[in-house]
Length: 122
Image 1 (tube, helix red, strand yellow):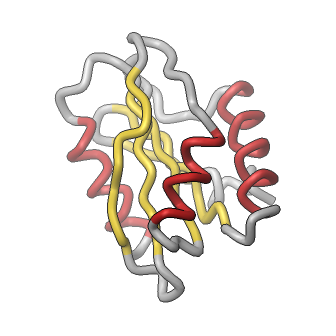
Image 2 (tube, rainbow, N blue to C red):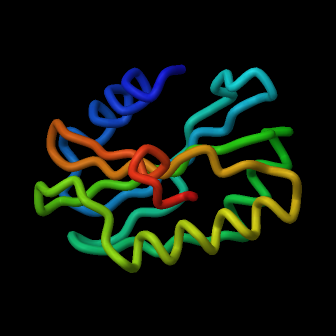
């Protein structure tokens, strides 16, 4: 799935959300989506992300990589410092298990950004 298709798919998932929601797309070795799962639902401006839960689900599905996404209900598709710190923590944890964090996509209204494209995942 291309970045644009992935972003468009996720924009549609978040269309009517009023709270922050975190989804993870689990990918196989050919970067095909195995499944997309909601892993957290928060309040209007935050959602808790469990690195352990992401890792357990990825291992259970034999995923070789994942794409994380969450929405910003304020309508601005930019990553916050907290988003970036959390993303880097998840990347390190998954990497230690042989799982690649392919991207973290932040969605707001009908727009999205890719942390990978922005250079944040390094």
